[in-house]
Image (cartoon, rainbow, N blue to C red; front, side, top):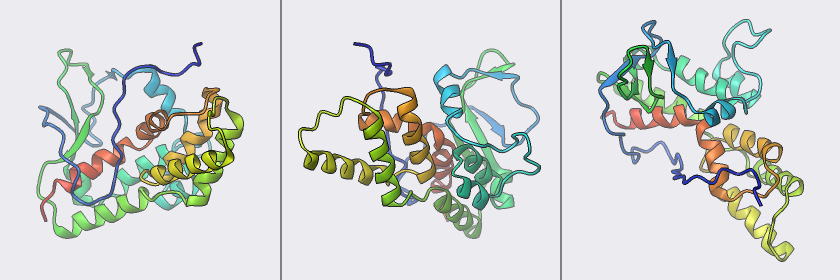
Length: 232
């Protein structure tokens, strides 16, 4: 029976800590300055990416929004999209000026492939590196354990297909999920858990949750990789 899940092969990698353990993505030829006006007219993005972008709540630039949110405001709202944008705006001036988008080259000059990473085109000072890491650490903080467990309970109550035979096994499963989800930014985790029962009727495999979570915080992950590549 088709339960509406995406059966495609996926691979997943937790964001992890801010320590420089994350490898740098292969270098690509095309780089686009952050904030540059010389941008492609359109980009090739999948339908699923567009759907995931709509999982967020009130975002920067919505009607009634008179100024971009600061990171504390975005964190208080729990809006992943607003947090991603606030992180980029809140970078130290030199970090922001040297940060470039990394996209594969496209044969059509009016199009580009999807963003695959960031890189800094120059050397940052130790102070800039530390300030950028502190900003990311704040943006990537996990949700409180009780908030994750409560959200998981709601998913369990609102979905079918939980095959655990006893309450003890169910508790163990929720504990295992909560422990693993603490590796991801709390805003992305809670947003994905809230969205799951609206999209699917079955209890999720952990990898399926990760597939919803990672796109909500991928720019933070890319920025983490870029700053960890800087040698202080």
